[in-house]
Amino acid sequence: MTLTGSGSAYDPPGPAAPSRVREHGPARRLDRRVALVTGASSGIGAATARRFAMDGWQLLLNGRDRRCLEQTASGTSALVLPADLAAPGGPRLLAQSALHATGRIDVLFAGAGIGWTGPFAAMPHTDIDRVLALDLNATLHLVREVLPSMIAAGRGRVVLLGSVAGCVGVREEAVHSAAKAGLAAFADALRQELRGTGVGVTFVVPGRTGPTRRDSPRPVSPGSVAHEVWEAVRQDHDEAHTPTTWRTLPTRIRTLAPMLYRRLLNAFG
Image (cartoon, rainbow, N blue to C red; front, side, top):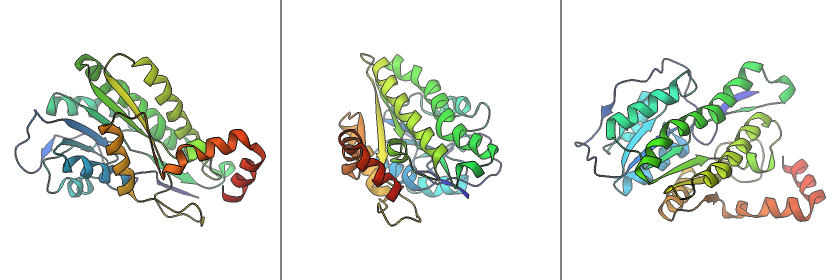
């Protein structure tokens, strides 16, 4: 029974109050497009940040571990904004720091998250709260803080990091699955609300990226997920899946052959 990273790595507990912006590399140019990336310490978040940096975006990197954020920022003009999004007021303080630093956020990539592996009946109540606080609640609050500036500018994109666990449910990851399913519904609802505002919503569904006790499905690399995120933002896509078979396969099997779907779920979990 373990608490683990989800999509992007979970930074170990420790002091993580929002701190003054630190600049890396050459002086920042505020005329560039700006991406705020949470969960940027490692994994998908770090890979996504590096992919955007390749195209010249100004990056704002959030996570709990300053040292890891600085490693992600190395060689770029990224600004690091260490903060614990699960702390009271964390999303608000991060959004304020980000907008103060650059005056705009063109893309919010909400990649921060943790997971917990083990039987739900044995899951401590505190861990239930921790997973939901970061994977679901903090993400919603951060979007709420950033969205008004995007609507006022008439442009922007919110990118939410989901999981295949939120599509099909994964045994011994019940709360993580529930949180990611909640994000999927949130993405659909928010997208409808934002029609005509110039602000889009992308929901990213990666396969498993980290080590697993299961032989199948095979993990996907953070870099391949980052590539799909980049393409989805570049082309204004509502969804991004990697591997691409996850785009339709689970849904079709669940709809057309529910008994087969349950058997596969029981077999592969």
